[in-house]
Image 1 (cartoon, each protein chain N blue to C red):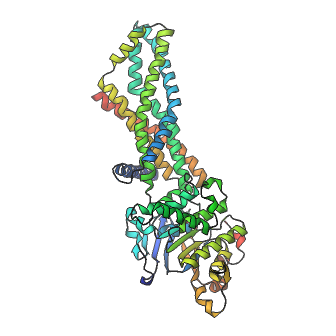
Image 2 (cartoon, each protein chain N blue to C red):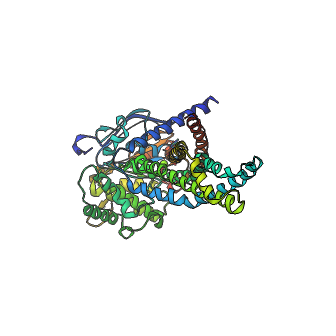
Length: 252
Length: 283
Ligand SMILES: Nc1ncnc2c1ncn2[C@@H]1O[C@H](COP(=O)(O)OP(=O)(O)OP(=O)(O)O)[C@@H](O)[C@H]1O
Ligand SMILES: [Mg+2]
């Protein structure tokens, strides 16, 4: 038990060390802009379809569930503000982050993991390239920038999905009222939450993926292991940090 | 970083020990390598051969002892300060270490361009010329635009050699250059390794499982005129033969050090396993 805690603390320390180094590299040369754009394409554009699809379905599901609940209080016209707040504050950021964690924390971990076990990471260091600068920092930048964008897309499509349920299907409210209530229900705090959360989740996803990838040992089997661990760890961290941030923002 | 051959050994290990967790991967290793010399390193799987090579250029951190490379103490430098020192050593990694995302040409060019960030010694045209030369050296010029995944294992090994020697380093580290290859390809690769040593008089550490690889390095020399390996015999060549010494590792320790004659005379059961009947011990 004590050993387990020790390794846990030690690996968290390693993780913070990696995070520290990759942040420091943000302001140090050389900058690998090509890699940043490549990763933005892989992470951002690549995740767009699944994020859009999931956003749309979640919007529809929330609208359906809320419609029933609100009906019992005779408040079904509130559907638009409820859907908006749930999506923008919480569900949009967390769902998108979980999807991107499943898709990219694993992708990053397996890519860096295979590079580790085929000694490409060692080769980089031997040839004068800092792997953190070349591999981790671009992935960190790209994920932290793309996740807020993806979240906005998920939110928007979610709202549209909810609209399809609430207006044409169930006739709870008319179209103009739906959109104006949705817009009015948002305050600055909600928007800030909705964008800062994915920004932080993005960093977590990239760093966790890189961390597990870079410490892969034990051949191809090790790569599979690292991939699974990265997804599990990133997901847990996302929930944990979401909770922490809710505490902070609710206090605001 | 620049090495003056007259100024002493290229590489020195002084009582080096290294631990992974609770187990020792290197224990009390001392060795010296002078310019132009070769060390053949034998040892069972897991005996610490790869770890030893990685320690040379500071890819792993030692727990005890000191390592001096080109007269500078690697073990007391920070990672960022080691980059300059590392450019003096070429490495062929056991698992290849070729970058999948780069073509063969770009892989071989990588050490040149990367060095360029520091000093402006190679122009892009010059770099390409040197890349082609290095690829011609390993007889693979035609693969310039291919990707590592598109060529055979033996060819990848040779591209790895080209990348290791393209900067003409005074020290080359070869980790299992012939492992998993058929005898013909393996001999071809060893001929290249010997040629590199004799054309440029570079020092080398060679980890291998094949006894023959050691024989080639110690008993042959490359003749640039006839473009082939010639057997070293007679007293005149004795000094040339002495440049190659053998190391046998066991559980992180050096259990044998000496010439090929010494090795063949050894009565130690473990050491005897690495003599002659090479194929039995492959991997
Ligand atoms: N990154 C690592 N973490 C933990 N242990 C390691 C690590 N790398 C190597 N080891 C251990 O250190 C010891 C020496 O490993 P090394 O790779 O140097 O062996 P080797 O002589 O090169 O073997 P092989 O002939 O199979 O290549 C082994 O017991 C290995 O399990
Ligand atoms: Mg090895």
